Length: 192
Image 1 (cartoon, rainbow, N blue to C red):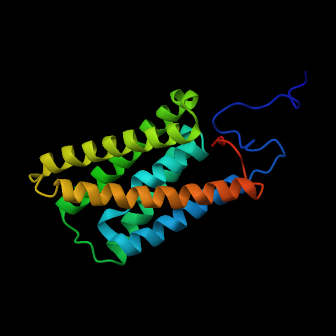
Image 2 (spheres, rainbow, N blue to C red; image 1 turned 60 degrees about the vertical axis):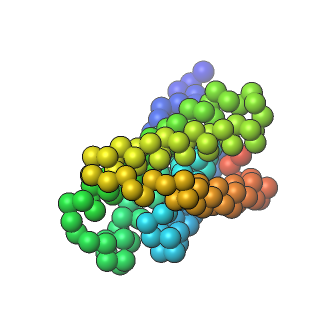
């Protein structure tokens, strides 16, 4: 088999769909980032990072999912500091880093759960990935809070509201993901 006919399986290959469409999957990633910008403007401090991480893990390989999640976080932080007047303090910056790290860890957790839980059926695998990712995200935020000196906001009511917000966004993003598939979008994870 010639080198031209072989499939490039390196992480940097952009062979994203069998039909050779290299742009459509990244348009989906761009739409996720745009939706995150809207979420950041509406919800400021409780952007549904878990929902975006789970959908990114469902849509892309791990590298792509992490790139989309990092982009979601970066847009959130840029909007927060440049447009929503987040204070430029060390504590606020460290909270941002903690949210970013927690979001990336949650995305990895969702990706790994989706890899091993596929035999449970798609919906149960996604629900399990969401639950695990949410736990990882909140654990990361709790560690950040301990390091920064305050865990007062980790009440059942606050955790429940954040979980509900993420679940609603995950359902909405999941519906968009399904709609994208029905309209001929990429039906499986794509390579970054």
